[in-house]
Image (cartoon, rainbow, N blue to C red; front, side, top):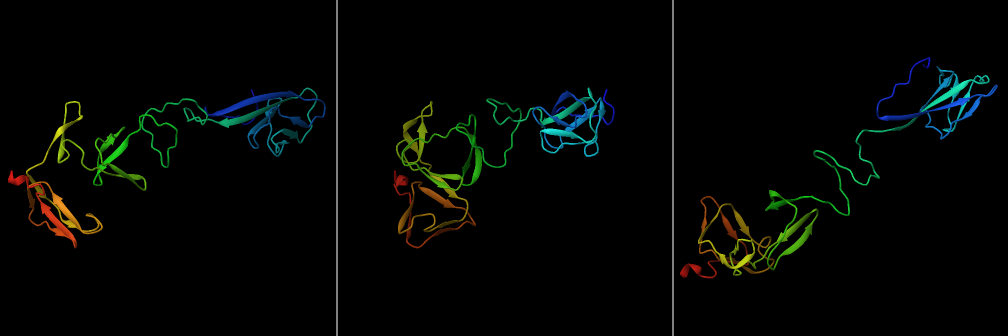
Length: 235
């Protein structure tokens, strides 16, 4: 057993020990494979030596004794190779599995991300998440808005007006429906910011549109509002 303050290692520190037999008056020893500076312990005949008092090790390759060794003295060099964290992510690992949630602050980059989900919002309100978004119909437009894709969906479902009626397999039938009544539940300013950049018509195919009490609908300059534009209420 070595004499002196023992070297105590945790499970995540890898080490190796190299043993050398000295020749007469030898002071310079080459450490096979080198070492990290300040990461080597030196023992002489089982007695631990003190760095700076009994030896120097400053170049990562050799150790110099300040007092020459005698013939057949045994010098041992305990080298701390690296620091390992159990179950850490290996940068060059082919496949790795993480059990539980993984939170990343920053950007995840990869050629293929399997099982990823995208958040879905409607009018700025989060409604859920999905792996795939499939838009059916014509007139869909997409625009990048920073990290968000703004999606505008025009008609094209069912009979081309209203809300499409789908078959049982979720494909579009030739029919759609238009509600008879609708309510405006919050203030609306219908101007060039939401209803076109020039003179335009603001229309609704719903026959009966009711503005709730305390709610205001303001039609901006150059805008004309038409309710029941298809005159469905006359049918």
